[in-house]
Length: 118
View: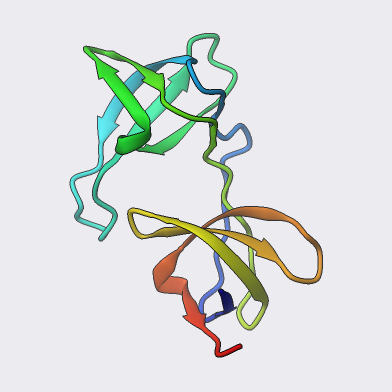
């Protein structure tokens, strides 16, 4: 589905979580849904090279550690108002998007997108 950006989105995470299926991660805080983003858990790779929020349904929780149930990256997409993107996967209030003019990919909050008729 194609979307028009209705609010700018920036990210300051220079080392977003990037894990492969079966990878073990250290678990941190869980989102409480206050920002309309329930079911997220903060994860960090064991070597500390990347960190970020992951959808809780993609992590098998084992005490303070978790195992990735599939490949995942927490890379967010920086966009400006009125840019166009195409969304493919929606999880817990966020959509995996690709910029139409640059092919850059990342997650965007659904609330910053307005769906366009094709």
